[in-house]
Image (cartoon, rainbow, N blue to C red; front, side):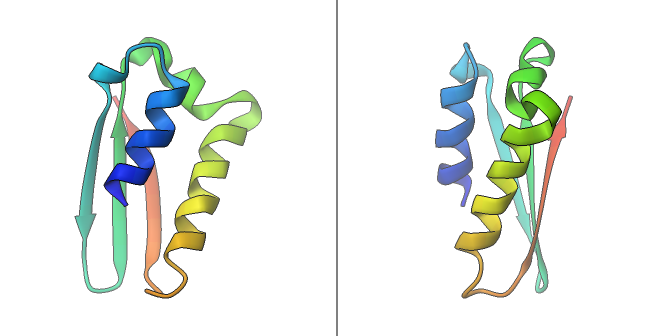
Length: 76
């Protein structure tokens, strides 16, 4: 999960070395937090949230067999 998000986000930003992905998992939910340079948050979100929503949809698709809720957020 972490590697997947990291790969996608690294392609969107100019400075992939500043990207940090934090994953916390409970019995019912997986929390994924993306930490990027504040200047590049817009690139990860995309126009009208299209990039971040696409990443969320990919994570939901990957987790279908596991049946856990996935929460994806960008933190500053």
